[in-house]
Image (cartoon, rainbow, N blue to C red; front, side, top):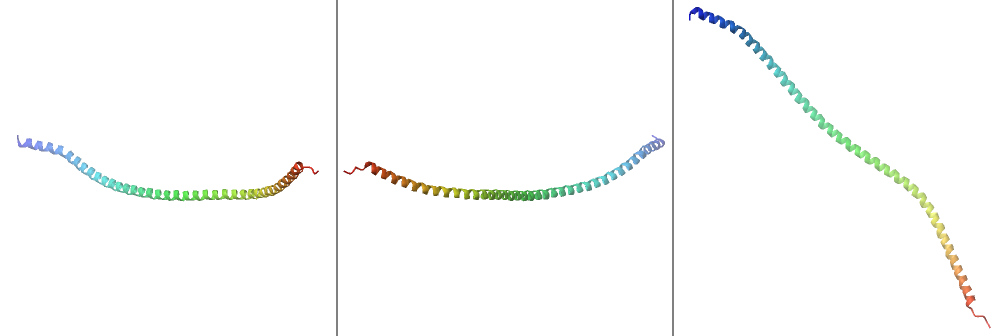
Length: 141
């Protein structure tokens, strides 16, 4: 191989290398762009992690608020039920008071009638004894 052949090979190699070098330069800029994209993505991921942590915190606080509201609602419902029971008992008391008064009057009348019945029975017993005495007595001679 001659010097001229070597020069031709060098020229061919340089011609082949030149586009490759420009491709390498393009790849380097692409890699640099990808690195910056990766940095942006990492920042986005960090932001998302922070947002998820915030959402978890919000979820926890919402659960606490919901539990407190549930407790307050249960207390309110219990109080309302007790108020309803009280109103029912008051209504029954008023009704019972009126009925007790009527029953007392009725009982008083029955007691009065019982007294009269006892007195009437005593009189009838006395009359029966007198009639029996008259019927069983021996005539005088």
